[in-house]
Amino acid sequence: MDLFLTGLISILHPKMLFFIFGGTFIGITLGALPGLSATMGVAILLPVTFYLPPEQGMLILLGVYVGGIYGGSIAAILLNIPGCPASLMTTLDGYPMTKKGQGGRAIGIATTSSFVGGVIGVLALIFVAPFLAQAALSFGPAEYAMLAFLGLSAIVIVAAKSIVKGFIGVVIGLLMATVGMDPIVSVPRFTYGSIDLMSGISYIPVVIGLFGLSEVMVQTLQMKQLKAVRQTIGQVFPNLADFKKIFRHFFHPAWIGTLIGALPGAGASISAIISYNRAVQASKKPDEFGSGIPEGLISCETANNASIGGALVPLLTLGIPGSAVTAVLLGALMMHDITPGPLLFVQQPGLVYTIFAGLLMANLAMLILGLAGGKVFPRIVNLKQSALLPSIIVLCSVGAFAINNSMFEVGIMFVCGIGGFFLRELAISPGPIILGLILGPIAESNFRGALELSRGSLLIFVQKPISLIILIVTISLLLSPFLRGWLLKTKSGLSAGKA
View 1 (tube, one colour):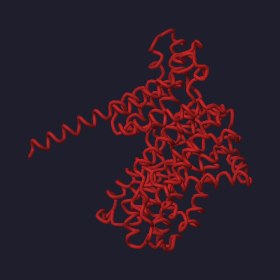
View 2 (cartoon, one colour):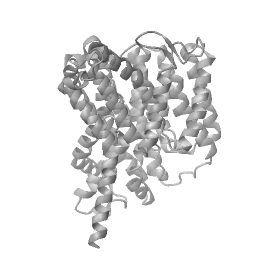
View 3 (tube, one colour):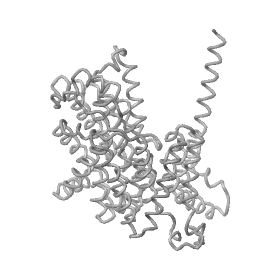
């Protein structure tokens, strides 16, 4: 508790508050723009944090993360267009409320529910993460190798529509991770005589290209000015009856979002879907869902924001990013020579608890900005893409160049952006590529290190209970899509036989 209070005091400095509120404002702005997500915002601002101390840089990115997930609800409510994937379920009841002339009320409920879910997710992070990190201190190379494989396998299944395309994305990332010096014997690999490739392919221009530039290309081909929001926003601050509904229905969405968010590969979108479905099943009037009722908004907005705190649990305690956003956050930490994992809680507890307190403050900033700007932020959806998209290209280029003052990095960014565009056309998600690039070196170095310790024996990966359990979970995740398909076929066959 003393460490948390120290972290809380540190973020109350005016400069720290400026970074938190500024990052949250940027996140809400980007989240409210259809097609621009929290992941893209964090990726674009990542180079900016290179010139800041780690604490300040992380506070900006956490603010963008929190604001981006919430901001997607604005376009979902007013235009029936999810501002980000996490707001898909918000459209089901948010837009019908707008059609009833209750757009302001819907935004107020979404904002308050997001705050409640976000705070519960942070509290879970504060109380669970230290214990998990303490348990992980006994991990060796074999356990870390299995954890890296677990992270890769989970994102393959969840982040892509097809497990085959997910594997393709991970393989691309793993191949990119092999460029540079061998981590064990320091022999150049796939550098083709290029000095710039001796240190490997930097993940920052890759992230900016795949998530930023490729998205600009997609949006350019689909460029069209959205219809102006003509609905009357009305009162944004929830009334007493809405507050009662929020505090009556927040519990289940909050723990669902936190738990799902903590699973490597899961995230806000899945949390919202599961929570909404659970709310429908538990309701005495399930037919009313989808017609514009507050309970529908509360279920999905509480869950998707609670997942933020849950997603940071495996990142900070085990060094495993469970989503595209946390993969970028992992890159931000490593950019400052900070390796997430159990030792982080021992070596830099001040940074850890500053992150905890900063995330809590980011949720408060989201509540204040969301309610105060409830009638202003809706106008963001009308920004002209013809002016917005070129600005993003400039930011991407400057960000890629600023890391090492190298045009080579800008070239990598453009190559990855063009490649990412074609991969998106093939429905290959950029998320597995980034995780393959980041987790690849971790998996390779620990896997080979474990083999060195065991003198080439693979039994080292099953001799300890922890590594064996992680291996079993990994294999189960990889087999689960095939098992689900087999069960569905069997079930449909039995139903056809009975008919």
